Amino acid sequence: MKRIGIMTTGGDCSGLNTVIGRLAWGAMRRGYTVIGILDGTDGLYATPPRVIEFTPDTLPIENMRFAGSFLHNGHAGALNFETAAEKGQIAAFNRKIRKSIKSLDLDALVLIGGNGSISLAWCNREIYSDVQLICIPKTIDMDIPTTDRTIGFDTAVQQLTTYCDQLMLTARSHHRWFVVQSMGRDCGNLALYSGIAVGAAAILIPEIKFDINQLVAHIQNAPNDYGIIIVSEGISLRGHSGRPADMISRKLTAAGIANRTAYPEHTQRAGDTVACDRILATRMADCALNAIDNNETYVMTVLECNDVHTVPLSVFYDSGEIVRDPNIRDVQTSNAYVAPDNPLLSIATDMGIYIGQTK
Image 1 (cartoon, rainbow, N blue to C red):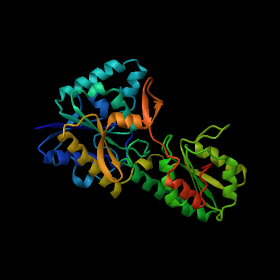
Image 2 (image 1 turned 120 degrees about the horizontal axis):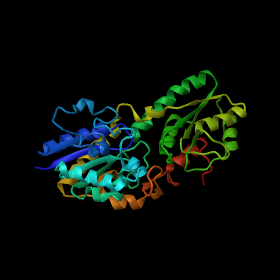
Image 3 (image 1 turned 90 degrees about the vertical axis):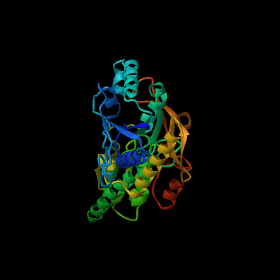
Image 4 (image 1 turned 30 degrees about the vertical axis):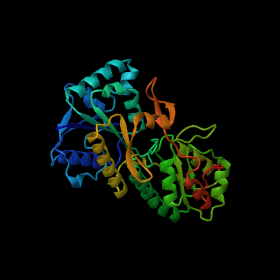
């Protein structure tokens, strides 16, 4: 009988509890013992490691829709890959994590993480040499290469869209524009998809250059005197500093355009998991369990052309744009961005949305 470990790492998002629950239920149906690792690598670094054993009552099926992670994702300031690197303790940290995994007598470990966590797993793969390592991609940023969707993205799009829908009503009442700053780091997918859904007048994302004067002119010439402008948190405006939404707002105000800024912040990472994410989480959990049954290791589940399967972590890592991790010295991560040929870009232009200087 196999012993399976599950842990979540990185930022939280909706869908984590769904995939945790589906993994646990599917594994128990196979007769496996299922261990949940609390607080990610924080829990593995503790002595003894902080874990729970799943039973059919641990995570009731009606609670699997909730946002956040039942297993938690770690404590701020705790020793992890980032803080260990800062203190020059990364080698000792890695040894301790590997020792903890071995002490749990696991046959397989399912790591549910974002592009940073999965890149770290590949770059520090010797940690997991004593177990089968299966990764499942989750992130509201949808910045993970090789997969067409990540768990949590569709719920985040719905959360941001609903937020903007409510702002649109007050915007109309007061003949006012709202500049809404989305999450997404250096990837504009969340802003792009939500902007299309809400009917934004403009969508600014890091991948596409924009001209602030063209944006101002676009708003001045809009058929309405109210609406939504979505700004991804990763954009920059030459010669200006501060939060992106504030920078755009100041330019609009200088041009005599009534506007306010709005910051949905972590509500984008909350909300009951939408059906699309629940289905994706279930499919990826099933794929991960099949990979364990087939003795696969160092693989990640992906959705590609509506087929869920695994790819080697080396393929995931090499398929993206390799960039320096902003928080961990000497570590690089594999990133995906909005592709220049993404059909939503031309659709935005066709719909009269200002998207920037697209070709």
